[in-house]
Image (cartoon, rainbow, N blue to C red; front, side):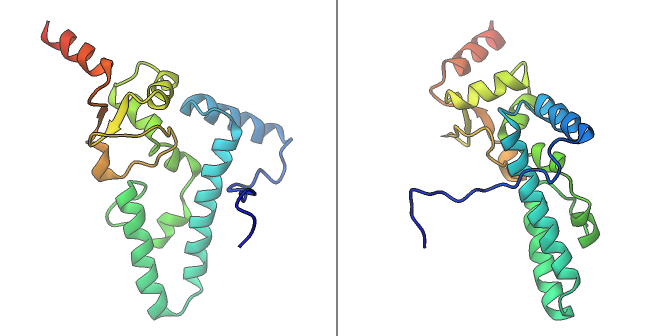
Length: 170
């Protein structure tokens, strides 16, 4: 099982970390999505890499196994909001880290207009001002499903909720 104090690494860094084009692309994504550091980007890239690897292994699987597991994988990604309803396995292979970064709570809060900047969205989440269906979420990297997206709002006891209500009413 391993030592519980030694947590396993959840990410893999880039294979060629000092390539200029890779560095520029990473910095552009870190700035655009308000990530704390590149590790958050690498975690997302690793999740996408594992999903794509699963899709490639399904392409080589026997037909009866492939159909069942392909359907389950696509349904999971559709619920997450990464793919459309009528997606195929080829669409899974075309996923990019940006697709998953768009589903983070931090990005959703900013896109819904609850925060003026992507960085303010992160701070509101960390400080406990954002909730999903009344349940406070403090992780900016939380992946929001399509069902939860409409339920993202200020926390019930947040002073920001009262301020917004007062501004809208008066």
